[in-house]
Image 1 (tube, helix red, strand yellow):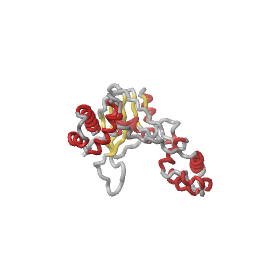
Image 2 (image 1 turned 90 degrees about the vertical axis):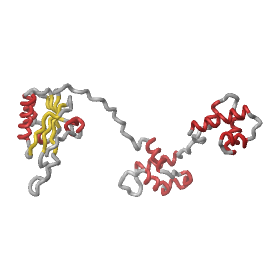
Image 3 (image 1 turned 30 degrees about the vertical axis):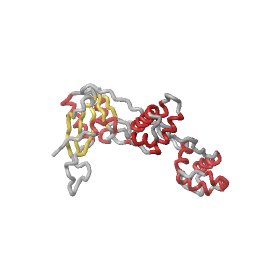
Image 4 (image 1 turned 180 degrees about the vertical axis):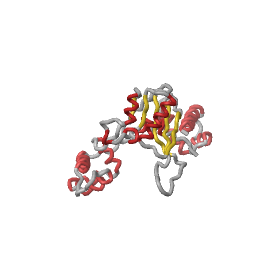
Length: 272
């Protein structure tokens, strides 16, 4: 659309130079524009310096006058309401609450005409004075791909295709203990049981190691069946001690970081 407007203005400029005897109505009929449009742009083109093509792009559409600034005293009262909520308010007031309390402030009675009327203005004042901060976006670094069988990720996943019985376990009825190669994202083993606990989990790991050998590192989350109870954090679980005896690095994921064990977390085998 903008290109079409510039082209019509350029055509009008050429017609004025080639046919100065034409009336504005004739120019409008030739270009296919209204008479008012021709009158406006004929005036602008004649006022512009000869050979200046910048006039064809029109005038800037931005604001010509600066935005009204918040009165320093009003801004001080906004920060005071934010830091010390009035009328026994039991929470930190936001922009909408501050906008409600400003006209009720006795110190601002003579500033009634200059008080902000938009929550956006309050928001800008709070941001400018560090009352509202934003966390910086973390720069994510790509993870280098491991070699095949260099790191194994393991995790428990519920088998959703198995319904719960009327009596007995209602959750974790049947689980799959998955083993995924972090280097190739291939599901190496999936052992399915209905009674996974610390002992059966250790037996499943032994079965996997007998089949695929000893990898340098095994990654798993902080499942109590794998790392033990929180009260025994100073004493490694039997699984961790077993891996250390085999010179396998037990890489336990930190709390609330499922992305450290992401390959196996989204891997669920289909079981009929």
